[in-house]
Length: 150
Image 1 (cartoon, helix red, strand yellow):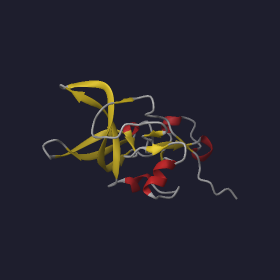
Image 2: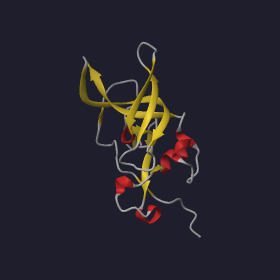
Image 3: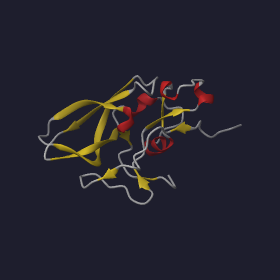
């Protein structure tokens, strides 16, 4: 009997992005920001088109949040997550990125990776609570993870 979890295919990565100086940690060596979500393989989902497959929590996120393989995606709601964003200097977006810590409020269209998005909540510089819809590809574990051993 196979007791290993079904594989999760991660469709995006943040390892090619240049992270600049900000409040968040900068990736180094094997420590990187890891996406929260991926998809199941074709054997598990029976869906040929990769972006039409349902969301699946990445193996690293399952371990980080202490969840099991069959945990529904909605169980991440109300947890702290990271959002990969561009750094803004002098009201202009730069080619450098940072990881903003937010609270995940909701996940929409979790049955279709290509259409799915999350709703996040965070406090701005004026300590106002803002809610924003965010592309599911930009959500990550809010801490650097050693990708070789985690």
